[in-house]
Amino acid sequence: MVRQLVEPTSAPRVRLSSWCRNLGPILFLMLCLCRNEEERVINYLFKEKGYNKELRPAAKQQDVVDVFLTMTLSNLISLKEVDETLLTNVWIEHTWNDYRLSWNASEFDGIDTLRLPSSMVWLPEIVLENKSLTYNAKEIRMLLKEEGNDTNKHTVEWIVIDPASFTENGEWEIIHRPAKKNTYKHIPKESNKHQDITFYLIIKRKPLFYIVNVIIPCMLISSLASLVYYLPADSGEKMTLSISVLLAQSVFLLLISQRLPETSTSVPLIVKYLMFIMVLVTIVVLNCVVVLNLHFRTPSTHVMSEWTKKFFLERLPRILHMSHPADDEPVWDGALPRRSSSVGYIAAAEEYYSIKSRSELMFEKQSERHGLSKRPTHASGTPKQLYGEIKPALDGANYIVKHMHAKNDYNEEKDNWSGIARTVDRLCLFLITPVMTFGTIIIFLMGICNHPPHLPFKGDPHDYSDENPRLL
Image (cartoon, rainbow, N blue to C red; front, side):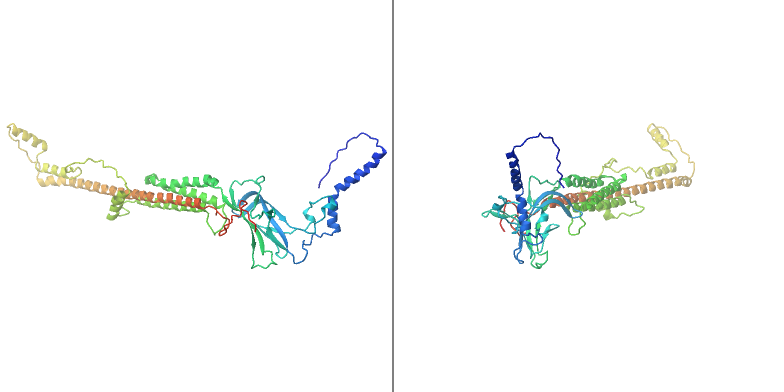
């Protein structure tokens, strides 16, 4: 409803002569005639000719009305991937010829164009259903709009974009925008599904948002999985780090799944990458369990076979170029003296048995060199008595020696299990890191090579663009 606001103004009084009084009605009549020429055309078309908007503009019942369609895209608002809906702002232009709305322009002051509200004229009542335009084929023949003159005419086989009013989308880029008429001969013409005009939008995602917010953080988190193999098993943090990486990957997968449609026809590339990294991190967790199990094995719980010792402690470390710590004990050219043995105790027993101490024997040799006589040594007991006194000491010393040997063997075998754990840890590092690196590169190459098609329709050489127009 339009309201006209008129502000009252005070005007001076003017006295009109008689000829001015006669001229006023004439000018008013001429102004009314000029202003109501369009009204005369409307009265002529709708009352005198009896225009009926409920009837199709067809001279005969079997005639088909041609309706030309074109679409103008104003804005690509968003794509809701979860709901699989595309939100756009478009204008659909319908063009048809209604022979009943015709008049002689010379009879109506040269008026050749008349603008009327849509409620006053017949409409084709074409339904916009998702992306297809449908109608009864026996009454309406839908065609794509044709532009140009008689010598250079072409069919508009694309969605029109007005650069002045179009707003670029920040997430999606339009690659192709073809328009195509489809006729389904297996469907009868009485059905509104016999023909349609489909407008296609082939779009490509701009990857910067996902690269910065998803891919780079995910790569940084997945790289932490390789650092698990550098942590020593005694630190107790191997499982903590690996499980933390696994939980972080699970959070990323949960966030991505909320933005993707629930479909089983295809798997998005970002989900493939996250699943690949999650599988590898799960394998890393299993490797940590195995390594920790090997590291904390003892001779009292597990027995190490010879082939295990040779393979994991000699051959495999040599292949993996693992260095062993240097031996801190000094190397002697000859035989090492036995420090923890019964030699000293046997010598002591012989000393008691000979009833002479080492000091007496030393002074006796010196006395002989200086010509002095030997001093007799008196035995304080029989040899059996002396052997019985020294035997418990020898047995205790031998027990200590055996215990030290057993403890050394125990620690040595425990160190061997720790060495096997380090070997397995290094082997997993050399296996997981290349697989993670090459797998990531291959998946990203799949994304780089996953370009939209160069042509809108497979097998059709036409590109349906305004740069290469044609007439159908």
